[in-house]
Structure formats: structure tokens, C-alpha cells
Image 1 (cartoon, helix red, strand yellow):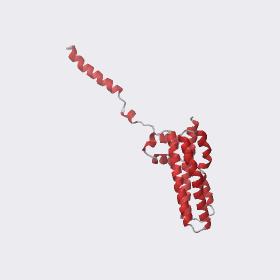
Image 2 (spheres, one colour):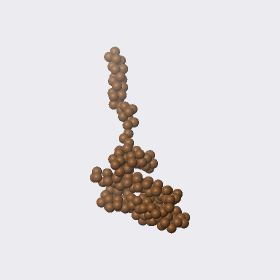
Image 3 (tube, one colour):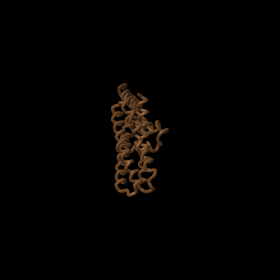
Image 4 (cartoon, helix red, strand yellow):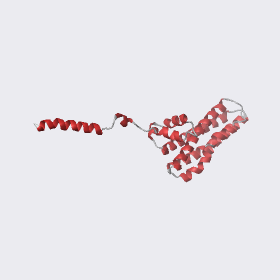
Amino acid sequence: MTSSCSAPLLAALLVLTLLAAAPSPAAATHVVDTVADSCDAIRDFVDYAFCAAALRSAGPGASTADRHAHLLMAADLAAARGASARDAADAAARAERDPAARDGMEACAILYGATSVPALRFMRGYAAARAWDRARPLLALTGQAGIGCDAALGGAPEGEDKRRMAKANKEFDQLSTMATALLNKVDSRG
């Protein structure tokens, strides 16, 4: 009789032990959003909402990636946006009849193609290898195209191409600033 009473008691004890050891549903679903953490760390330099939207657009793994991966994503996004801006400026320069606007667009294409985009690509490569001493000197070049392009178009008459470039420059500036700020955060952590 003791064995028949102890079997249900032993089964109940086993079930209670398993329930106590199992993680709660809240604990099982709690995942840290690393995008929020990275964007919060650089919010003094880049708009938080822009940062979060940009990193999330990089792919489904962004929300669990570490800050180093976010740096690489930001550099890739900035380089892609810069290459797109360079192509747009080049096309606008070829089609432009106004000499000031054409010269401004040509300057934009040169600034993106010869400085910022290559600098971002090199910086990204060095950052991927964690060669901070090589990545850091490139920071001075990464954001120059957006600023320089706005200045080059200053004397050009208002038009759709100028407005489009101003928008592209602003987005590029934000993305290159993200990459710069994230490099500074990652590099400072060792």
C-alpha cells in the first residue's frame, strides 16, 4: 500500500519540480532590443527615430545584433545612400542646362564619388577587422560630401534636382553621422 500511495506523490513532486524549473512565458519571450540600445547611446548626435528606422531597415537580425554590427550596418547604409546620391547628381549634371546648377551637381558627384563613399567603405572594412587606428582617420572624410554638396549647390537656382539633392544630403549626413558615432562608441569600449 505504501508503494501505491508513493507513486502518485512521486509523480506530483516530479511535476512540481519540472514546473518550478521551467522558464516563465514572460522570461522566455523577453529579448533585449539592441537597436534601441545603440540608438539611445548616440541620440546626442542622431535623431533616435531615424536611427532606429535605419538600423531596422538593414534586416531582421538588427534587433539582436551587437553595437559593432550596428556600426557596420550604418556604414553600409551610408555608403549605399552616398553612392545613390552620387549617381543622382551625375545624372542631374548631364541633364542640367544652367551652368551654376550643372557645376554644383558635378561637384556633388565628385564629392560623393571621390571622398565620402570610398572613405566609408574603407572605414567599414577597418571597423569590421576592429582596426580602430586605421578606421578613425577616415572619419574626417566620411561626412564631407553632404556638407560640400549643399555648399556647391548654394548658387544654383531652385529646382526639383536641387531639392532632391538637399534631401539626399540630409539623409546621407544622418547615416554617416550614425556610423561615426557608433564607431566612437564601439572603439571607446575597447
